[in-house]
Length: 77
Image 1 (tube, helix red, strand yellow):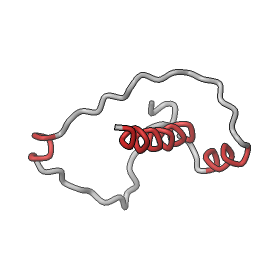
Image 2 (cartoon, one colour):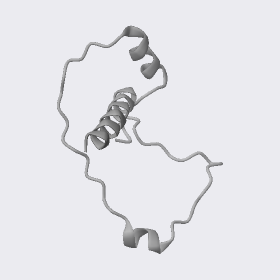
Image 3 (spheres, one colour):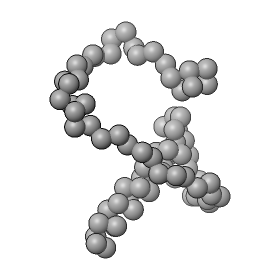
């Protein structure tokens, strides 16, 4: 991942935070659901806006869709 530029060193001025041991005692690992590859037609301005915010635009689009899904799934329950 580092060779592809997906990982970089933190900035020299980045703040450091200690994580208390209690955090790890109750932490629950996140397992991402499987993904499906799709062909999707989007409005140009919507796609351009997401893409203009840098790498990870498809991941951010998925996060928006997941938020919408979660909000409506809870209402249906």
